[in-house]
Length: 109
Ligand SMILES: [Zn+2]
Image (cartoon, rainbow, N blue to C red; front, side, top):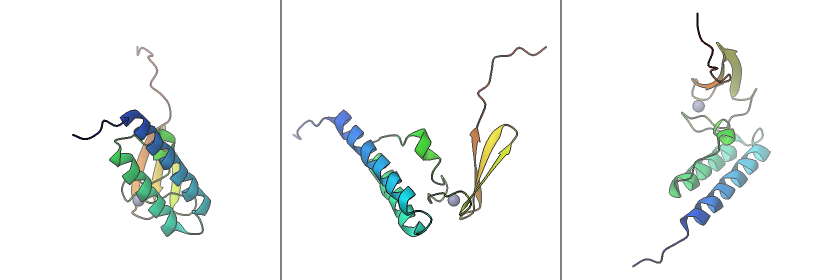
C-alpha cells in the first residue's frame, strides 16, 4: 500500500508554487507574453494536481477562456458596467465579469 502522505502540506506547497509562478509571470509579462502564458498553464496544472484553489486575487490575472496572462492595456480592457467590472480579453475576444458591490439587504418598498 502507498505511504500516507500529508495532503494538507502538499496543497500548501502547491499554492506557494502557484503564487511564485504568477510572480514570475508578472515579472516577464509585457516583454514575453508567451512565457507568461506558459507560467499560467504551469500554475493551473499545479493547482489541479493537488486539488488546490487558485486564490481569487490571482484568478483575475488570467483569462478564464483561453488562460492567457492578462496585462491591462496590452491584452486586457477593463470597464465597469452596471455595477460589475468587465474584463475583455483581447486575445480570445471574450468577457469576464466580476461583481464589485456586495448585495446589501435593503428592503424594497
Ligand atoms: Zn482570453
